[in-house]
Length: 440
Image 1 (spheres, rainbow, N blue to C red):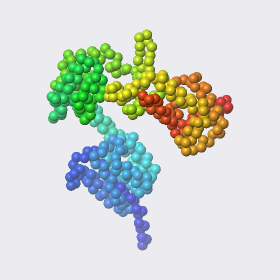
Image 2: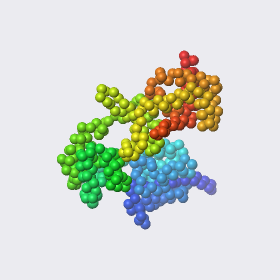
Image 3: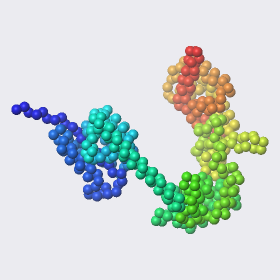
Image 4: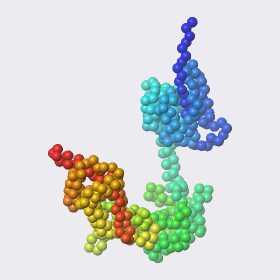
């Protein structure tokens, strides 16, 4: 009698998932139930050589709407390493609820010759019919998930329209009790003072300074800065309203600020362009945008401008630290854009006019020899300097950011820090430009 050859060993991994961590501390939880069913199915296929691998792949408290799950990532890594032949799940939506993500997983399975099996639905992705059926079921699963998300959004909007507070950042002046806003009287008095003081002084900077002197701390545990005060002055929670998609509704909670005082504050804001949200700050001719910093505050300096009578425009770089915490906190505050740009451009062009020094500088920084012939380097850099004034501001800015890592500004002057590898990139561009001209 001929002995039947032993079936080839098929290594099977069980994957389980539960969206919430509720009940996972029980002695026998949902993940255990899924695993028990999968292990029983694998045992039934022992005659086909199926064997359970020792590792557990369990994701408790993770949504099936994405692939950011630790055990799933470990499972995929083991599949890529060739440690698994079959992935067994209790139900297909335990693996994923996204049709797009499912396609990605199946693609990886097929690349490594891995079969996917659902024990309650008996699908095998190695067959075309199995893949078709799985896609159909997963489409319904994703549809159900999207419908649930729409219901949640609709419920959220309906609750807002009824004036209910639906969570989020809790402003100073309120506490939460039983999911409702209640006034914190000590903090509420600070809010009322803030609104009254703005009407008196019309200066958020002054208010921030006085709040710091009073040692007032916000809900986030820090002193209130200018952006925080702006947000407070514009927050309609303080007049008893809730906002949803720019629409204000009467809230269930009690307001802190009287409507008349609110109207005074916003009339002042409306009359001053400084408080308007659309105020222009960034200009395309700000060639140092993103690389100029205040050395004292170690904060970026932002391009801005003011218009004087007659329409003449004056450009500046303002310290972001001074904007946020008050001008008195920074000895620099702002610098005229034209002057600082001239200083930086002058330093860079000075290096271009003395290319030997520039090449030595970049060699010292990068620790490598520049492979381009030195004569060609010198010629290219001198040509660039002679053409500088003909280059558009946006191109000047690009070249500066290619060569300059940052510009540190202080009341004593400006210090330019060159970018490692910047000269190499520039020389590559110049060589390509020369080749293009020669070819033409």
